[in-house]
Image 1 (spheres, rainbow, N blue to C red):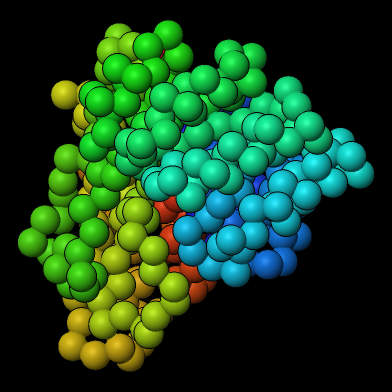
Image 2: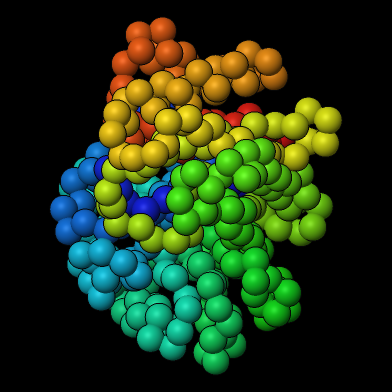
Length: 315
């Protein structure tokens, strides 16, 4: 199983909705969503669309950022109300475990009669003192996913003997400025999909072509970058190519800079005979029409392409 880790930004949620037409395979893909905005309508819409395919959404109920930080009960109420009102039962309460406060939230959930027998997922970012107590509350039938950040993988796997776990990594090599990607235009990204099963994991997760760093908005970039993952047919590795604009001396003409980067992307996929995903088809449309869709759409297409790629390479 692949768990793409998304934050609940508009274009990330639109990416999930548009991938329904692929269609997404519920036996291979289960997105993690960390909600950021108080208005949860976009998450509700995405969850309903994914429900048609029985795709589970691991919805983080103790987000680290945004309007819903410290609003766990509100998010749990949202999950139960979506199920009761619309039959949207594919939203799985998911707890980030980084400190003792996170454990207390999980403990409150597990000991609340209202949630007795309710399925849940855990994402362990650090090993905390209460880890043995967490194990006690992990009834097999209730745990949908038990995901461990790669830095903690060895220590926590020993704690979770007998409990099927998945791994979370952040292979995206984020740069301070887009222009810095010129130093590493083509990089290794990941090969977790090749080895996770034989290494005893139930699945794997990453932060796609976004990275784990939380970035809220920002000014217009001097350089436009399009990040595209692809399969290296020789090694079987997933690599990432960064397509950069050329005229990067100021923040003017973002549309022109996008087209400069897009020309390079189109040439690359033609030379490498890259299979056409939904996102690549859209990039080709923008190339033919010379239209500029906006930075949010570029990010959305990069996300869509990576998820479709991962689904296509998984057995």
